[in-house]
Length: 463
Ligand SMILES: [Zn+2]
Image (cartoon, rainbow, N blue to C red; front, side, top):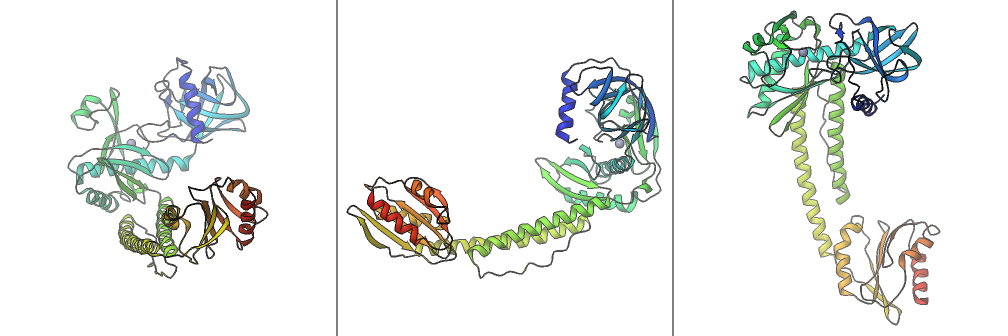
């Protein structure tokens, strides 16, 4: 089930204004990855209350082990079991009915009824990845805020399975802040024996300790998650028990977005290797495209790209990015210079037309250039000038090297002949492509245009 479908289904449930009167769900997922729950509410895929569910719909239990989106951490996925039947859980929501966990499921052909007791089992690999990324986000936030960025707050958290997003206010030394935070996390926190401590406290106390975000709303009693010396925060998400469970941390990317610096990081080494190699391949491809564009202008141009090794760390990635930027600038300059020369070449091009009469009041004005660089696009300005220089003419411009032609009546002419109609009727037989209007044609051809031109001129003569 893709995200578009999932969002549409949640919208159905929101729209139906069921005002369900359900007790707050007991969440057992901090300590367990599987459990069982009694069904106390069912909705079909349109969001209507039902007593039996078969297929796509929503289930509410008295208790659950499935985490529902909150604090930036995305929901768990997993399975419900009824006997040997497996029912996939795609997503959860605890906002529509406040603190009531709604499970989005597809029961297939199985029918679920109110008061059924189902086994619950989350996807633990996914949960572990989320938990590690979530814990790393706490440490990254805290390190930026308390150790390297003078109390500036971070925000815009999104915890995904492969990576997590975070933002901070843009300061002059923001890249330095990030690099320092990265270094501290790798050398001091992850892979270190720092156990999690959790306690509950009244929100007033948390505010006094500056643990609460000034503009967020909280419950009267809040959950405090602490890894001594590394981070302390209020949070309802899932976290590792000890920082030695996190063996890897890396920043993927950072970019400036208005007054914010946004960053993407990960505790997942496999995902990071994949991200860095995709990134490097795209960069190399862009350079190759730039080279190809220059070669189009100057087929003799040759340039050996240096060996660009895929980075394995954020620091290597920044170094490579700088190296690529210099090559890009160099190639862009070369490209501009070559383009300038090319336009000059077109301007200075002198082509003598051959003028022959087609009829009493119409001439054929033919130009030919044999050139591998002069595309029709480049020739357009030049061709426009011919229109002013010649009247009562059929202009025929041909480049046999690139095998294209441009055929057009000048503005002033007394012929009533539809070029495009004639072309469309004959192009397939003559293996031509292109098109135009009654007054002009752009044609590309395989062999030559001699036969087409011969018959065209005969037809124009007849008309
Ligand atoms: Zn948390």
